[in-house]
Image 1: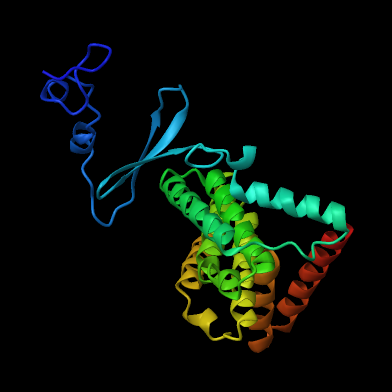
Image 2: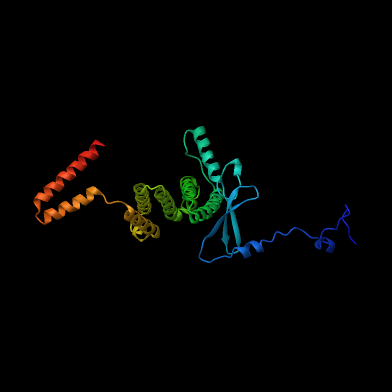
Length: 276
């Protein structure tokens, strides 16, 4: 019978194949957490290192991600992410040369940045389901920086614009996260301002590609408009707007004494706002 030099079973032998080895089969995990098509199934778990992690159930298994930093826990070039590394490289290039001009990202670097952005995309989807809107805002803002970096420094034109098709979606998710965080804090007016800013950013995006009409067909715009309507329904009525409506009705109906009284109230509100 073949033996290894140390006296154990020879590699590839029947004796070696019959040894009991620890099972790494995850079938029991998958059986306890069935995959639901069309649903984003996520949960938080505590890892072996004691840290909270995110798991996402996908059709062929489970994705596990860190709650912060790079989702896979890696630190490329000793940095939090490849994005952080390249931003530092841009900073150092600018210090050496007095300008950003001349810094470029090759095709391999752009591809790696896109792959990394995909990991953050998976995480901010999971965080949105978990209603961790602060994390969604952080990760979407981070991915927008990837788009800006590639658009500005990629050597190849296709790499400069490959990710731009996703900008409306990322802007929409970033805006929703900001608005929902504000609503949680009871700041409905701030939430409305975030939505208006997001809609303006989308309008400028489509205009920059000479497609202004695409704004009105965009699914991202529809989502934000629905959110805007929802926020407005929860806002208290604007006293100035209500008085202006009453004034117009009084004038139309020739109730001039009441119209004069309403004008005085509007003037008083305007003076009070000015003093504040």
